[in-house]
Length: 245
Image (cartoon, rainbow, N blue to C red; front, side, top):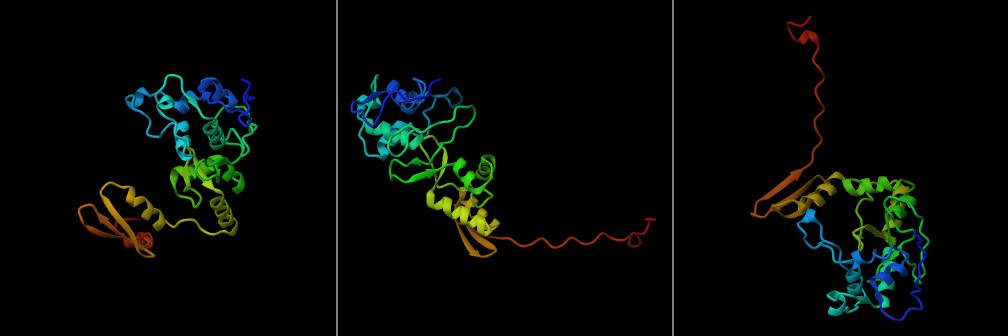
């Protein structure tokens, strides 16, 4: 497939239909459909996705009112400023609105360069960028995100497609901490972060360096204390056990 954009968005003034949006970003002609109205999945009971469509999310972020003719019409046409913001947010366009070179291939695609947050204009760094800065594989960063047991695992947010990202300041802090050998979150930090996600937990706070307070929805208050496990007793000698040779 030819991924060369066929429409220069820096010169375009007229609204674009879905086919033109795909063409402008160098994608298949049907690619923009899922950013306008993703198809429901049988596996979810044909419910609408929890995340708003990318085009709608970007329009809201930049304060663009789409109107019913776009949101509900049969042939929606999006303002150029929304398409430009979308391309920058997803990594298809650079800050100037020019196409970003993409390496074709199969598998998960990460933006070649940091993307531009539509609401703030700040750069968003992705798994591949953090992995390169740390000198590790993208799989290592993904593992950290999944297990939530590394200092760099917590992302700053997710973009319009649900991809994890970090702000530039976070990336610099993470890289500096790793290079300086500063430890990541302690086990107690991780427990304090994890507990509020559990059903029935109302509030969690740190009591001291080894314990946290937990308040349940029914008003019950608990204290969770971490203490080292006592050393195991050495194995008994045969002489201590009659009947053994």
